[in-house]
Length: 189
Image (cartoon, rainbow, N blue to C red; front, side):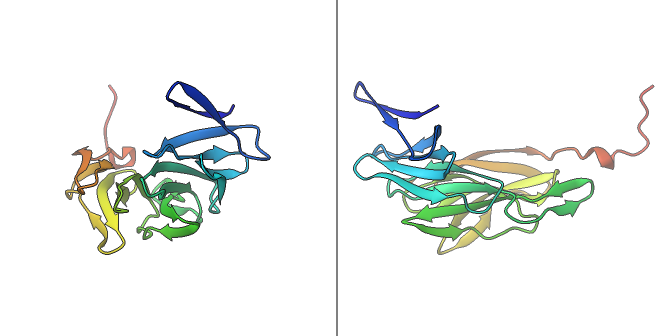
């Protein structure tokens, strides 16, 4: 399978040398594409071709979003050993911004779960992080100046889905997940 770009009635194939497949994940206003291939993550720029981003040391990594400056938001799965919480094992999702060949990792949270959802042109990131694994997650916004800020409400789960260039975050919130191990003495009669 090959990634394609459809623009102005033309189809352009995105090929990564040494790879039989390419999967596009995001495109910015300039038509630059970030995706995955057999050889790792890539950025395709029509004017300069393919840039290999690598794999970032996890079991898997996925480009989630790309702003108009070419900064790519990447989620990396299980880069660190698992952390145990009750019966759940978390290696977590970590998030980074890939900018001009540099990796800017967002701060690691207590349970190693931070999942970016969107990046705006100012480089601000919105997403979610684990507060209590398998029970409560909170939306966050992060930028290099102010760090990670919790947008959640204690006792509720939330997740940010997008952030625009004015810093407005959109997302969802609601009751926490129910932990099946917290049920005591229920009978199914």
